[in-house]
Amino acid sequence: MSESGPTFFAWCDAAETLEAFLAALSALVDPRLPICVRKDGTLTDTTSMDEAVEMIRTEFAEGPAGGALFDVLLSASKRIFPCSGYCYTEEAGRDISAGPIDMTTCDQRRFLCSLLELAWGSGKCQQV
Image 1: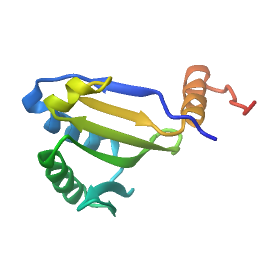
Image 2 (image 1 turned 135 degrees about the horizontal axis):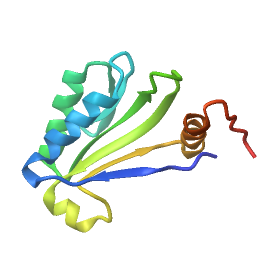
Image 3 (image 1 turned 60 degrees about the horizontal axis):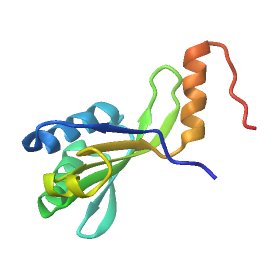
Image 4 (image 1 turned 60 degrees about the vertical axis):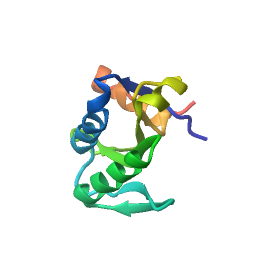
């Protein structure tokens, strides 16, 4: 069983929350990997960042949040980490215990093992 985390939060001007989230998403997602976004109440996969952005804009406009499930590809190790990210409207942000922008890796164990390799170079991560 994998644990979720770590989680990263970001704050910005409320009017810029969606644009900041979309900029971070565009920077993190490898264009060859699918992005899963809610469309008409159903999760939909797309490899088009433009299509994902439009679906997230629509979801955010309907409130209280817009988000995506996506994979991040680490360029050095070529490892892929499943992640989720959400941005919340100003009203919703007051009701949750997170920032207006919330991104988390869905597999803590694999993520932390990668950090160990980065820190020690030749270190090995073993499952205990």
